[in-house]
Image (cartoon, rainbow, N blue to C red; front, side, top):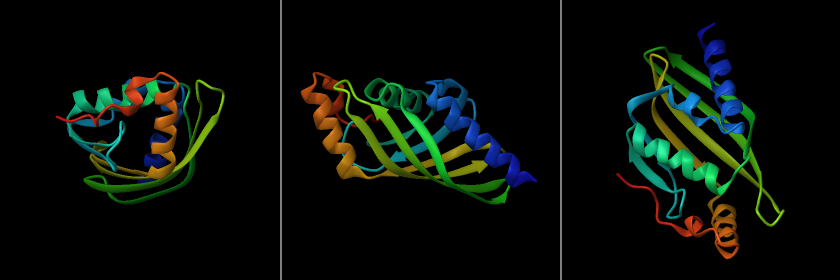
Length: 150
Protein backbone atom coordinates (compact mmCIF):
# COMPACT_ATOMS: atom_id res chain seq x y z
CA UNK A 1 0.00 0.00 0.00
CA UNK A 2 2.83 2.42 0.87
CA UNK A 3 4.47 2.00 -2.56
CA UNK A 4 1.12 2.62 -4.27
CA UNK A 5 0.71 5.90 -2.36
CA UNK A 6 4.27 7.00 -3.24
CA UNK A 7 3.60 6.28 -6.94
CA UNK A 8 0.44 8.42 -6.83
CA UNK A 9 2.37 11.28 -5.19
CA UNK A 10 5.19 11.09 -7.77
CA UNK A 11 2.75 11.03 -10.69
CA UNK A 12 0.89 14.02 -9.20
CA UNK A 13 4.22 15.85 -8.88
CA UNK A 14 4.92 15.45 -12.59
CA UNK A 15 1.37 16.57 -13.38
CA UNK A 16 1.98 19.66 -11.23
CA UNK A 17 5.24 20.36 -13.07
CA UNK A 18 3.43 19.99 -16.40
CA UNK A 19 1.18 22.89 -15.35
CA UNK A 20 4.16 24.94 -14.15
CA UNK A 21 3.34 24.44 -10.46
CA UNK A 22 6.83 23.68 -9.15
CA UNK A 23 5.92 25.10 -5.72
CA UNK A 24 3.61 22.11 -5.12
CA UNK A 25 6.57 19.85 -5.88
CA UNK A 26 8.93 21.79 -3.60
CA UNK A 27 6.57 21.16 -0.66
CA UNK A 28 7.64 17.52 -0.89
CA UNK A 29 11.36 18.34 -0.66
CA UNK A 30 13.45 18.35 2.51
CA UNK A 31 14.86 21.82 3.35
CA UNK A 32 18.39 20.44 2.77
CA UNK A 33 17.55 18.44 -0.38
CA UNK A 34 20.42 17.61 -2.72
CA UNK A 35 19.76 17.89 -6.48
CA UNK A 36 22.23 16.64 -9.07
CA UNK A 37 21.50 17.13 -12.77
CA UNK A 38 24.40 15.77 -14.79
CA UNK A 39 26.28 17.97 -17.27
CA UNK A 40 28.05 21.30 -17.69
CA UNK A 41 25.21 23.34 -19.19
CA UNK A 42 22.47 25.74 -18.06
CA UNK A 43 20.47 22.95 -16.38
CA UNK A 44 23.44 21.06 -15.02
CA UNK A 45 23.60 21.51 -11.28
CA UNK A 46 24.89 19.99 -8.07
CA UNK A 47 23.02 21.98 -5.44
CA UNK A 48 21.76 21.66 -1.90
CA UNK A 49 18.76 23.38 -0.30
CA UNK A 50 15.32 24.58 -1.29
CA UNK A 51 16.37 28.05 -2.52
CA UNK A 52 18.80 26.89 -5.25
CA UNK A 53 16.46 24.01 -6.16
CA UNK A 54 13.63 26.55 -6.59
CA UNK A 55 15.95 28.62 -8.82
CA UNK A 56 16.70 25.48 -10.84
CA UNK A 57 13.00 24.70 -11.38
CA UNK A 58 12.37 28.33 -12.35
CA UNK A 59 15.16 28.15 -14.92
CA UNK A 60 13.87 24.89 -16.39
CA UNK A 61 10.41 26.39 -16.86
CA UNK A 62 11.78 29.67 -18.27
CA UNK A 63 13.84 27.79 -20.84
CA UNK A 64 11.11 25.27 -21.61
CA UNK A 65 7.76 26.94 -20.90
CA UNK A 66 4.88 24.52 -21.07
CA UNK A 67 7.15 21.51 -20.63
CA UNK A 68 5.20 18.28 -20.27
CA UNK A 69 6.43 15.36 -18.18
CA UNK A 70 5.16 11.91 -19.14
CA UNK A 71 5.94 9.03 -16.79
CA UNK A 72 6.91 5.91 -18.75
CA UNK A 73 8.05 3.70 -15.88
CA UNK A 74 7.99 4.10 -12.11
CA UNK A 75 9.62 1.80 -9.56
CA UNK A 76 9.35 2.28 -5.80
CA UNK A 77 11.32 0.29 -3.24
CA UNK A 78 12.17 0.52 0.42
CA UNK A 79 10.50 1.67 3.60
CA UNK A 80 9.10 5.07 4.63
CA UNK A 81 12.39 6.04 6.31
CA UNK A 82 14.46 5.11 3.22
CA UNK A 83 12.55 4.93 -0.07
CA UNK A 84 14.08 4.88 -3.54
CA UNK A 85 11.95 5.95 -6.52
CA UNK A 86 13.24 5.43 -10.05
CA UNK A 87 11.30 7.11 -12.83
CA UNK A 88 11.79 6.97 -16.59
CA UNK A 89 10.24 10.02 -18.24
CA UNK A 90 9.63 11.56 -21.61
CA UNK A 91 9.75 15.36 -21.62
CA UNK A 92 8.33 17.61 -24.34
CA UNK A 93 8.20 21.34 -24.91
CA UNK A 94 7.47 23.56 -27.86
CA UNK A 95 10.39 25.93 -28.48
CA UNK A 96 10.15 29.61 -29.38
CA UNK A 97 10.73 28.71 -33.05
CA UNK A 98 7.90 26.16 -33.04
CA UNK A 99 10.24 23.16 -32.95
CA UNK A 100 9.25 20.34 -30.61
CA UNK A 101 11.83 19.36 -28.01
CA UNK A 102 11.58 15.77 -26.82
CA UNK A 103 13.99 13.95 -24.56
CA UNK A 104 14.31 10.99 -22.23
CA UNK A 105 15.06 11.44 -18.54
CA UNK A 106 15.88 9.04 -15.73
CA UNK A 107 15.32 10.28 -12.22
CA UNK A 108 16.35 8.53 -9.02
CA UNK A 109 14.87 10.07 -5.89
CA UNK A 110 15.52 9.13 -2.29
CA UNK A 111 12.76 9.85 0.21
CA UNK A 112 12.84 9.92 3.98
CA UNK A 113 9.44 9.99 5.65
CA UNK A 114 7.83 11.28 2.45
CA UNK A 115 10.30 14.10 1.76
CA UNK A 116 12.80 14.12 -1.10
CA UNK A 117 16.32 14.20 0.29
CA UNK A 118 18.21 13.33 -2.94
CA UNK A 119 17.14 14.00 -6.53
CA UNK A 120 19.39 12.68 -9.31
CA UNK A 121 18.53 13.47 -12.93
CA UNK A 122 20.11 12.15 -16.08
CA UNK A 123 18.87 13.34 -19.45
CA UNK A 124 20.16 12.71 -22.95
CA UNK A 125 22.73 15.48 -22.58
CA UNK A 126 23.71 15.69 -26.24
CA UNK A 127 20.12 16.41 -27.27
CA UNK A 128 19.67 18.87 -24.39
CA UNK A 129 22.88 20.82 -25.12
CA UNK A 130 22.01 21.08 -28.83
CA UNK A 131 18.59 22.44 -27.90
CA UNK A 132 20.09 24.92 -25.41
CA UNK A 133 22.35 26.20 -28.24
CA UNK A 134 19.28 26.61 -30.43
CA UNK A 135 17.52 28.56 -27.68
CA UNK A 136 20.57 30.79 -27.34
CA UNK A 137 20.50 31.48 -31.09
CA UNK A 138 16.83 32.43 -30.67
CA UNK A 139 17.90 35.13 -28.20
CA UNK A 140 17.40 33.28 -24.92
CA UNK A 141 20.71 34.08 -23.21
CA UNK A 142 19.95 32.03 -20.11
CA UNK A 143 20.19 28.91 -22.29
CA UNK A 144 23.98 29.20 -22.22
CA UNK A 145 24.24 30.36 -18.61
CA UNK A 146 26.55 28.45 -16.29
CA UNK A 147 25.02 25.82 -13.98
CA UNK A 148 23.30 27.03 -10.82
CA UNK A 149 25.64 26.63 -7.86
CA UNK A 150 25.43 27.20 -4.15
